[in-house]
Image (cartoon, rainbow, N blue to C red; front, top):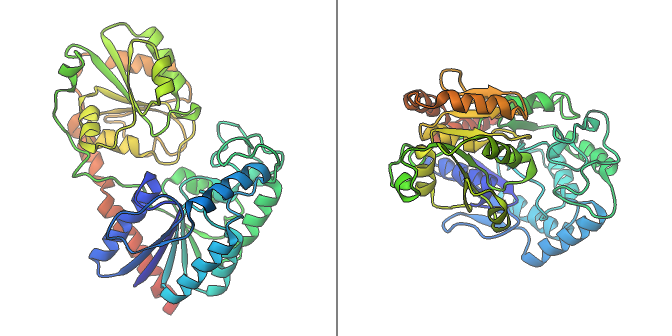
Length: 402
C-alpha cells in the first residue's frame, strides 16, 4: 500500500508529529509513505515533498491578511505537487491541515475529485466546514450551519485585516469537498464528529479515531522539581498549553490565584515572555519546553491538572497528564471531557471557576488516583491509534476493489 500524506508541517506542531508517527507505523507494516508539507523543515529519514518555500509562505500570509483567501493561494506550487502525486501514484491520500499558508485547495481538491483515488481527511479543528475560523464556540456563532457571512472572528487565525470573504470561502469549500466522492472524514473526538454531521459534510462517512500519545515517554517520571522550586508542602495545580491564548483559559488561573492561599501552588507551562512578566507572583510560569522528560516530570509532580479551555477538539495535554498519573479537572468543552472518567477525573461547566476551586480544595489530603489514571491512559497509545488508521485504509481499499 502506498500512502501520501499532505500537511502544513512535517515533524513539528501537533499535526506534523501525527503525520510522522503515522509514517513510521506504515513503514513498520512494510507500506510506502510520502509526506508532502508546506512549511519549516522535516526530520531526517522521512521521504518528503516540500510544496512551498519561505517566500511562498510569506506572500501567502500577506495576501490572505488583505484578501481573506488563506488556502486559496500558492497555485503554481500546488500544480507542481499534483505532478509529483501523479508520479508517485498513491493508493490512499491522507489530508491533515490544509490551512497554513502553503497550498491552493481549489487546485488540489479539484484534482482529487478527478483523480479517483480514496481520500481520507482528518479534521483537526472545524475549519473545513466554516468560511474562516477554526472554532466558533467562543464567538457563539452558528452561521456555519447555513452559510457563513460577516464573520465575527475575521481577525482570528488565519487573520484577515481588510476583506471578509467568509461567504465565498464557505461556498467554495462546500463545493470542493463535496466534489470528492470517495472521501472519508476522520475526527479525533465524538464532539467534532457530531458537528460534522450538522455541516455541509454530513453526507460523507465520518470515523472517530482519537489522538494518541507516546506512553513510553509520557509516564510517571520522578525528579527534583518540588525540591528545586521549594514546593515540598504545596498542593500543585498544573496548566499546560502550546500557546496561552484567551480560549485556552488563562483567565481562570488568574482568578484561582486570587482565591487560593499559600498552601497551593499554580504552575503554568507554555507562557511567553510577555505573559511571564504579567502573571502574579503566586503563579510559577515556565516557557514552552521541548524536553519531554522534563514535561513528564512536571505532569507527575502535580497533584491535579486543570484544563479550563473554552474551545477544544481532543486535547493531548489531558492525555499526557493522565499518562503521568495525574487526575484532570476540565470545563465541559468540546472533546476535552471525552477521555475523563468519573473514577479519577472531574468535569465542571464552562467558566465555572468556583466549582473547579471547590474540587481542588476537596482533593487536598486525599490520595492521588494515579493507578486509575494510568489504567485509562492505556487506551490512548499512539501505536494503537495509528493501527486504526491503517485498518481504515485497508477497509477502504477492499471496498473499492469490491
